[in-house]
Image (cartoon, rainbow, N blue to C red; front, side):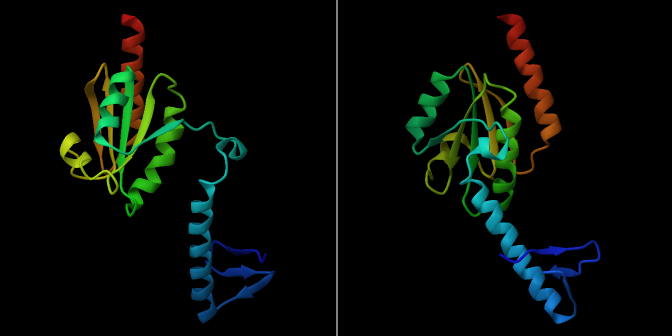
Length: 166
């Protein structure tokens, strides 16, 4: 397989030769397509092979499963996304990595394209939407643009409060 990279000056390097001019845009396109293919294939590689401890995620395919999931887990988080949402695909791995620090929080993923009723049931009007439930009550909701620093602080505060009361 040929190795292709962009230097800081955005000059494509291919097999040790410098590519300039109109070939540069072609090489950029090839690299862009290659990056997307790499990102898509990363989901097929087991997380332990990538060196990351990822959160186990339950896939929810009906509204009844939502109720069951929330009722069976004291701390439960729902992640609502759609297949064609680029922001959803960017946030999902970050969320799983963040939640790997909180084993007490169980995570479920809902594809709103497949479970269309989720919009009405959970009042999610934008994706991605993250909802955290504690004892079957919603305690946190983040939509579209998630600020992970603030989310982590709020998760830490909630988990500490629960530990102190138990």
